[in-house]
Image 1 (cartoon, one colour):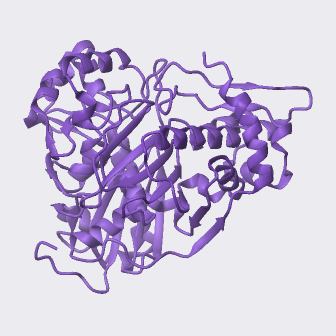
Image 2 (cartoon, helix red, strand yellow):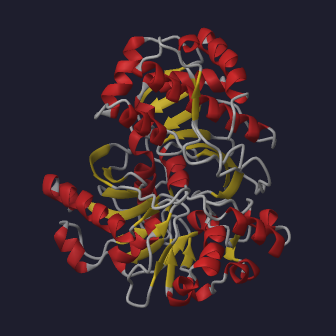
Image 3 (spheres, one colour):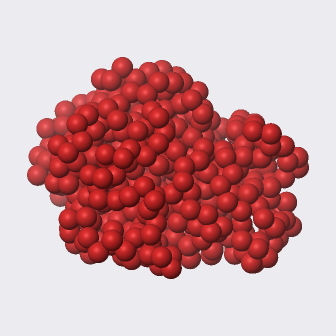
Length: 489
């Protein structure tokens, strides 16, 4: 690969800057996760529809996760051959000339910029055909136009505008760069060409010199600062790969590296991801198309804004301090879908297929017989039914829908949730032992590829695989009629 030599016997460090936590993994050439660590993150919601984080919190959590890895596995850290980065997509971090955040970063599930998205479509004819998506509120293009209108000082002072993982890259290396996969989801690019689009930048009120240079996902883009290498017992001047957005890295981690492969992520959000050989822009139903982290591939994505976030929310509502134990209790209860309420998971509005930040979540069908576990299972069912809506939206574009659906993300640890997704979509489900760290593993694979190694190594062991249960599928199909008739406002 570009004359780079593979490093034999090395380990590969993948860092995923998520919304609720930063995860770091050490993986070997066979894609076995040797060690992992994480550190939590919190989301701030200062106003309705707003969702923000302090960029420095991404760095503190990254440093904390790597401190833990170094403390527990110093010898393994000394074997690392390269670092790969994954991150929550669409966040806008604006830094001044001294590298300080001018304001909190505006996140992917922020809904304030709907009007600015409509204005962008009017200002740039054929916007979705250029970028692969309409400028929906959560995307950086719309949010930058919002800043230009409501907080112009931010863009006037901004020396750099960075995505979350690229802010961490800058802290790790001093390099201001982004990969074309993650950057394509900013909607500031001509996605097919892989270059920033001057007319769109102008319509958003920014300049090209405020944006990072663009690289490929498996291309080296920076080297680790010497003082950080010493702090974490890492080799000096480690290369840092371009990496990708968490959805693209999740695809690489799940082995979705060829035309037609698909996965569903049950992370903070829910993502239905299909890899495509050709660029097919998405112009409706809240879908979007970006570049994949794999050369020559693009990806169609349908997204629901609350998946594991909805489970965490209901756990708080019913007073359960441990989400995993609550999910296990629901699975053990074996509740029938006919006995649970209907839940629409629009806690932060919804993207696919409604494209409406104002949608509201709701339970319906409550009675005195409804208990706390009924509410929790209704949330799991509601997310599964929302993913079935995503599948229908993708199918309407002619996207390939064949073969098993790989499940990734923290929610994939719930067998009940996996069964519900299989039943709602009618597709076989496959969950690997590495499902919960899929994006971080994908970042580690990109690190290996940046040194000349294979993008995908050995196939990870399967934790769970199953076909849709016919009785459960029938029960959810009956419930879906009520779900789709549910009041949206």
